[in-house]
Length: 370
Image (cartoon, rainbow, N blue to C red; front, side, top):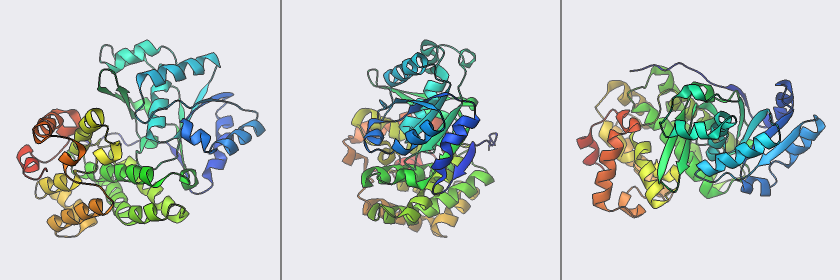
């Protein structure tokens, strides 16, 4: 077990906490803030009240709304140009995980993007880049990016995924207001909620698991299994939004100190080669992964029993029923993958950094993988 240094941003949470954002920006001495978001959120008008509040505080807000669902190197370069052209001195990420990841990459690229791209590609060291502080305002609850120190950036032309991981990429502040997710449609609510569930469970069957991360993960998984299906049916229920937001936050705190494991390692293949939405790609195989870890580690079994009850095989069956009840197939072949390619993807995933965090064995997973 490796206990990572425990860090988290300063948190403002609860309904209405977003109203404190302009004063927070002003208290940091920021004059020109770049707001990183996406075009959908802007068109929905979710930032209008924030712009008005910034005007009242004498703040200049410049908007970059070109973030894509899987943020690319090109996105970051465009945002950097806007940041420099407007002499920005602060960054607010207002959106989902892709937006916050983009803001993190921007934070280390404001000086010289070519250096950051070389850093992502592994050609130079971390000493050439330095991060600008970020305020993160999640509008979807699942990625946990507001409380982690890494980001995922995609090179779509080369079909590569780059993981940016630096201790100074923890946002300085995170504002978790369930009201910011009102208006998020059912499909996105489901996908991001399943991402949070995967974060929670992946931090349990993890070589880096520890008592603190396990407590956070158990709370998050228990809440999500109960609240997420109901929220998908009652999207305007602020109490359910708040429960899912809180669960996502705790899942983020859990995996921010363990990283993820096999399910996430497998997900990157599905997203890159088959276009599967990340939250689905990292959750559809959770029952198979769970069956593969039962009996492998006493602490893992105990944490899972706190979520699923004493019979873990029955718990894995309930987890599979939970997913299929939400319309999520647990068979890789239903996502366009051939059996041969899936076997190769499993071997590659197990050899990767996230796969090596997995406490189970290759044979145990293969015997359960569909």
